Image (cartoon, rainbow, N blue to C red):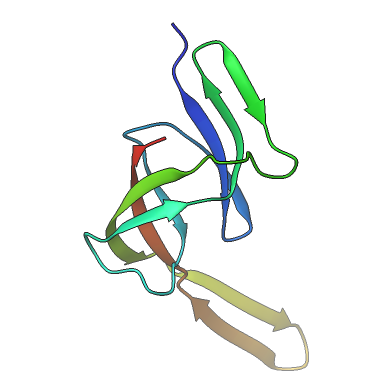
Length: 105
């Protein structure tokens, strides 16, 4: 028996998910821990042996999820260096994510 899964789009990225999965998505604006949310942008849904492909979204399909926590990723260092001109620039960035657990497709 094939495992049910779906492809959703959030934050400009696509994710292949199934029930029980935990994933990091781009920070959701009004996200509070423990809050339940619904993803409506379902691009593909596969259940059993049938596959529904949206144009661009599958009509009537949605995903239920629960927000686990808001996290910040690892620090990325950006270092620009131009030799012989004493031009050096060091900058750091930490991306914010929302960790989401998929409860139902």
